[in-house]
Length: 188
Image (cartoon, rainbow, N blue to C red; front, side):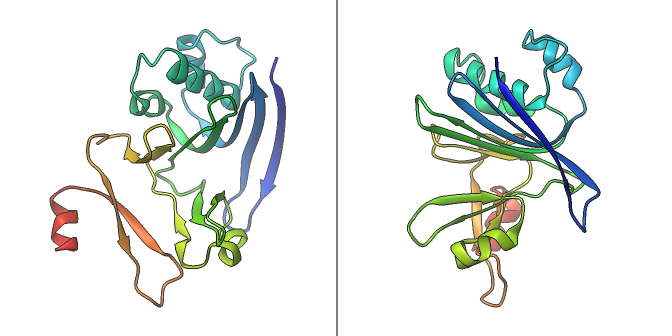
């Protein structure tokens, strides 16, 4: 049975965002936002009606890890809504991070700390001091898995995501774009 914790967080930019945390079978998940199609996904994963988004993401991760029937972009491409989540599988030391937020209601930032750790937060100010110029907004519509070792797009999973260095005066270390004709024009 998973342990669950829900907290409403107030922000000056966003009304209320729901955060959920759960641990099940040594899989840890932090989920922020909401899924518009939670009911149909519960049926797909054969979950009880009482299951919430964070439990669903743990089950989706387990399906990806154990059965590998679907590539990761299919697992994270099916949920609809505005959300960000981080899943850590203790047994395999695997990290899986994804966002989908077309309305910019659920931010996720990442960066590399001075001692080489990857850090994530929903508040850029929390990471500024520790990550410096490596701080960046996690690209919307993308996912990262330590099993794959790189960022990928849900919609274009075969195309690489390129980091375009920011100008010196900007606080962000890079902006990310899915490779295609427009990106190659910028990087040449």
